[in-house]
Length: 230
Image 1 (cartoon, rainbow, N blue to C red):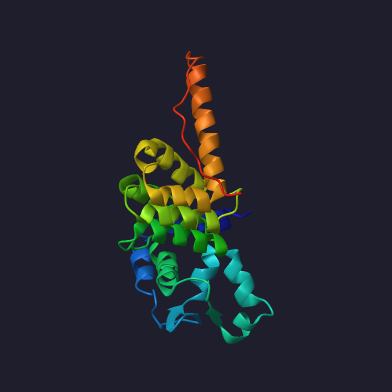
Image 2: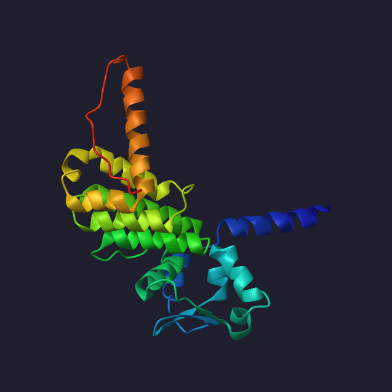
């Protein structure tokens, strides 16, 4: 390699190191639901969102296949989403441009739905964020009526091998079991979601084993009545 070529590459490398990137994030944000340069639309219920393929493709291989294969979406440059509420779809698209999303008052349920839609479309970064936001929400509001609904959503929208949200509701439920077990709605959640009840039992068994291993071999936990439908 000639010295001139080497110097040229060094110069390009030096220039690349000083490319201003601070404005990229803020600039990208302004293109959320902006028709400027938009080349695909996302429809949900009566709402339509202007989106950019480059942004979709950079986040998920799912969208790459959906919009570049021999599918209706690719031919029409349109994605129709019917299985999620428009607010959840909008928050997902908002995340693609902002790397965050706004949470309404029903934070526990909303974050569980955000986790679900992220899993559905292969958005791992959104999935991780929704998991953290969900955990924060249930830690703060486990004593609200919404918590029971959130439990049901978690156990009906995630498979048994997906432990992220399930472990959170089991941890919080065990931590506050003395208060929750007296609530009829919580008992109903155990009845309606046998996998949740089983996870609670496993969690208690692990806790007992942990305490016994610490030097309390005769430790016995208080009996908790768990209702599992036949």
